[in-house]
Length: 337
Image (cartoon, rainbow, N blue to C red; front, side, top):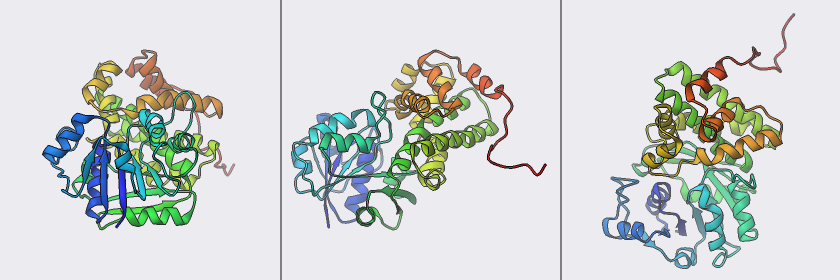
C-alpha cells in the first residue's frame, strides 16, 4: 500500500482517487475550493462533476496542501492545465525529492510554449515528474469501465512503478519513455476535438468528422515529430486513441464546446455552458505558435484559432479547408512512373 496525494478534486482527480483507493492505497484528495471539499466530505460524491461515483470512506478530502502531500510516495497533479504552474509553485514548499509527481493535465502554456511536465519541473526545481495520459474520460473510469492508458517517464523503473500503482482489472496501464509525444498528443487533440464539435454543431456528418480526425492526427504528428517526439506515440493510445475518444464522445468537454460554437454561440458562451475548463481553447494559440516556430503547416489548428480569437465564421473555416490547393496525401510515397 502506498500513500498518495491527489492534487485537484475535479472530475479526473476524483475518479483517480476512487481508482487508487480501490487498489488498496491510502489516498488524500486536495482542492483549494473549500465548498468542493465540503461537498465531498458530506456527500462522498462529486455530484456536479462526477455524479453516481461514491468516494470510499478511506479517502481523506482536504483543503490543506501540506497535509495532502505529507508522507506521500506519489503525488498526482490533477488541476486544469491553466492552473498547473500556480499549483506546482504552491507545492514546492512541501515537496520532497523522493516523491514522484504524475501529471494528468493536458495542455501547452501559451506564453512559454512549455509542456506541463516541463512547467512542474521548473516550479519544483527538479524532481521526478511523469505523465499519465490516454483515452480516459473520468465518467467512465469512475464507473469502472475498461480503460487503457499510458504512463511516460524518464526511466523504465519509475514508469513500471507508477504502472503497478494504477493498474487493475479494468484500468490497464502501458509504459513509454516518450514523455514529449504523450504530452503533445494529449494537448493538441483537444484543438482538433473543438473542430470536430464545430462540425457536429453545423449538422455535418460522419464523413466530415472522419476527415477531421484523420487529417488532425496528421497535423499533430507533423508538429510532434518536428519537436522530437516519436511516431509510435502518435499512432498509439495517447495520439490517435485519445483523439478519437475526444472527438466522438458525449463526455468530451472540447467536443461539446465546439458543438455549441458551431450552433452559433461565442467561445465565451460555450465555455460558460460547458461549466468546466475547455483545455483546447487554451492550447490553440500555443499550437499555432509552435507551428510557426517549427515551420509546420497546421491548417485545421490555425482555423480553429481564428474561429476562437478572430471571429472567423465556422462554416467559412470548413470550406476554406476544403478548397485548399490540391495535394498528395503523403509526400514521401513514390509513384511507379
